[in-house]
Image (cartoon, helix red, strand yellow):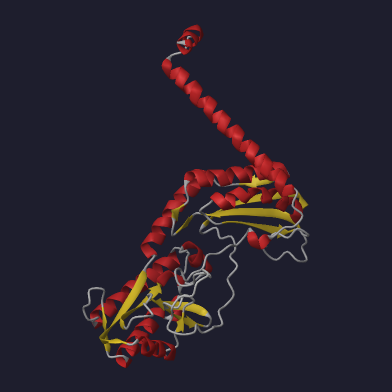
Length: 357
């Protein structure tokens, strides 16, 4: 009743009142977010130590599902896990082929400590974002400035790059997440008094959709199944796989094949407490360089395992794998590798590792 009287006094229609209420709610929400962001920034400035490793370049493991962390219990396995020399995790750099890149330029060099003091307030972004984001600076010291680098508190920078990944196996970045990142970059530029070069959100969303579509077409996993005539005892199978150069995964349920410290292909998980009736070898095509000839090597290992354990190569329907089928796979692989190359994401590259993660 009171609302109707107010509407009559102000001459407002139902639609105008509804719009006014919605606008008021939006203003309240923005105010709450600004207060939260300001508190986070104040808290960040109180920090005396800066840990870049915890903020930038966090990379997921490529051997998904096979390298589980310590869960506090012992998993049954075929035997002791063999140690192997694996190349150190690759540090990824900003890549305009798969990132939305925003550049800040300073009229005078600014210290890394001052920049990090502001970026430390973005801890909520790390928790909320589903996309990887990174930050790099161009060292103002021309004697050491070779390329963009991770930020160091003791260094000074003439330019700053902020980037967020546009797509991954989770899909393309969303409009809200991208808009939020761009708003943070704009606010950072204003705080630091820098010029900013930022692409439009709509342009980057279009790029994200195109990148996601290309990735979806190229995200291929090949499998080769070895079906044994008779179930092979677990100990005998384990000995065979080790003899062929495979190594038991950390969870003790799968085998991994490495080349020069890099994972090439794996086996599907196997019950270590049961005889082995079939083993499936798996290849994540975009994650391995074409030069590794991963499919040919996986096919060769499948043939050797089949011959040693009295088995045969079959497709997913249990039908013998024919030479025609192998030729067809090779032809499709050639097309796939070409498409990845043309898309600027060569198989096995650091760019592919990020996109297909």
